[in-house]
Amino acid sequence: MTFYKQQGIVLFFSLIILLLMTIIGVALAVNSTQSLRMAGAGSERMEAMISAKGSQDRVVASRSELMVNMLAPASEIDAELGVTNTLTPMVAADVDCQRTTKANSVDIRCRRIEISSVSRFGRGDLGQLTIVAGVEQEVLP
Image 1 (cartoon, rainbow, N blue to C red):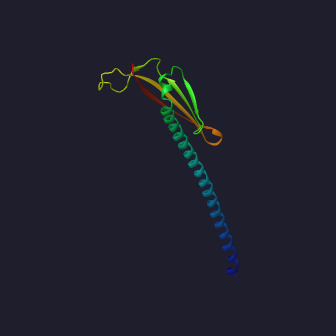
Image 2 (cartoon, rainbow, N blue to C red):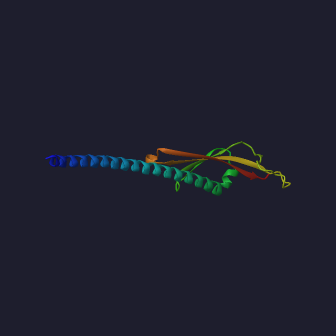
Image 3 (spheres, rainbow, N blue to C red):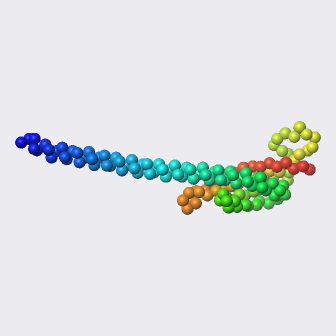
């Protein structure tokens, strides 16, 4: 008679173990989804940083004539990379260069410009990444 009473107990414990395994599986699936979201956000941030640096390089390469004669801040939008660049002269006049000029006899002066690049990223462009770089361009007297 005790054998027949224990058959229901095995089924009950099996269902309890199945319920616990299901809860653990759901918790792991939620954790995995959150990890994927975090990895995606990090990837978008890295992409925004690379876009901002690439846009700065593009401005330096294509706007060297603008930098020589620049007296006031100027903004440029790089639509291809989705970056806004702001070029600002750091000083009003030419200054001594940071690097040494002892190798030549010509007095070389430099013009310093700050390039600030702003890139937006994320859902609804809520994230903003700003990279600031200084450029020193040689100017002959």
